Image (cartoon, rainbow, N blue to C red; front, side, top):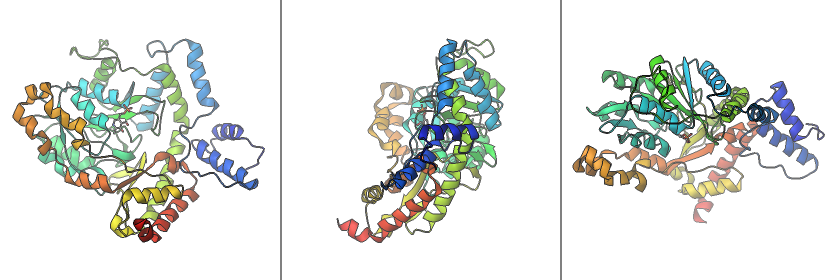
Length: 440
Ligand SMILES: Cc1ncc(COP(=O)(O)O)c(C=O)c1O
C-alpha cells in the first residue's frame, strides 16, 4: 500500500469499492503496519483489530437522522428500513427491532405471556442476560448442562428437564455457533412447547441452511457494542409467526397497537432512529466481515486441531454456518506439561495473542443462587422447591468446561490470514516451552 494512502482515505476507498467492505480496521491496521515497516519500525500487533469499524458512511447515516429531526421510530423511517433489511437478509417474514438483546428476549417472552409459576429451560454457558430475561417474569430458570465438545446446551438432556410447569425452551446459540436444534425441537414438539432462540451472539448463523431465529417461534439478537453487528446498543426479534410478530411489535411500544390482543403487559423497548440508521450503515459491510471471520475461523481450526491439547469448539453437523462471535477452544493443560490455563494465556499475551478464559459457571454464581432466597420465588414456587433448586441445577460438565475454555474475540478473526498462522505458531511455541513456563 502506498504510504501516501492515508488510513482515512483507505477506509473510504475500501468502503466505496467494496474491496474490503467490513475489513476496514483489519486491513487498515495491516496497511498501517506495512507503512510502518517501510520506516523500519516494528509492525504493530494486529491482534485484536479495532472495533467498531466505521467510516464516512456511518457518520453520514447519523447526521441524516440528526438533521431530519426525526429521532424516534414513531416519526422516522430508519428503524423500519433496518427491520426490513435484516428480515430479508435472514429470509424471515418479520423483524421487530428493540432497544437491546435483553429487551428482545423480554419482548418475546412477555408476548408469550411467560409468568410466575412457569419454568424455562436454558443453558448455564451463557451471558447473565438470558437468566434475567426469565427472572424478569418471575419464571423459574432450569439449567440444562453443556455439551463440552460444542460449548452449546446439551440438547440430549433437554427432554428430561421438561416438567408440567415448563413453559418455554430457551436455547442459546453461543459464540456465533448454533445449538442442536433438531434434538431441541423434537423434545419441544413432543410437549407442544415454544422454543425461543437466544441468538444474541449469532447473527445470520444457520442451521441446515436456514437462519437462526427461524427454528423455534422466534429468535432474539443483540447489537450491543462488542457484537459483530452493532449500534452501541440495540436488538431485534426475527419470527415467521405473524401473530407473534404483531404482539411483539405492540409489546415493545407500550402495547399500543390495535392489532395485538390485550394482555395488560408491555413496555418501552424501542430502538432509536440513530441506531436504526447506524445499523443500516453497518449492515453494508456486515456480510463481507462475516465471510472474512468464517474463512479465518475455519482455517484457524484446521491449524489448531493439529496441536495436541487444543480442541476447537465443534460445530454440530446441522450448523451450516457459524457467525463466529467468539473463537472458542478447550485447553488441555495435561498436554502442556500441566501449565495452568492462566499461565498459558499470559504466555500467549507475551506473543501478542490475546485470549480470555470466558464464562464462569452462571448457575453457581452468588447472584443466581440468591434467587433461592427471594421472598417472591419462595411464595410462588414454595420454600422446599427453592431450597432444592440449586441441586436441581447442577451442571458438572459445564463446571469443567469453564475451567478449560479459552476464547478469542470476533475482532481477532478480522485480521489477515497470516495472523491465524501467527496465532497457531504462538501456541506451538508455548507448548514447546510449557515445562519451563510451568515451573516459572
Ligand atoms: C447470549 C446473550 N444473550 C443476551 C444478551 C443480551 O444482549 P444485550 O446486551 O444487547 O442486552 C447477550 C449480550 O451480550 C448475550 O451474549
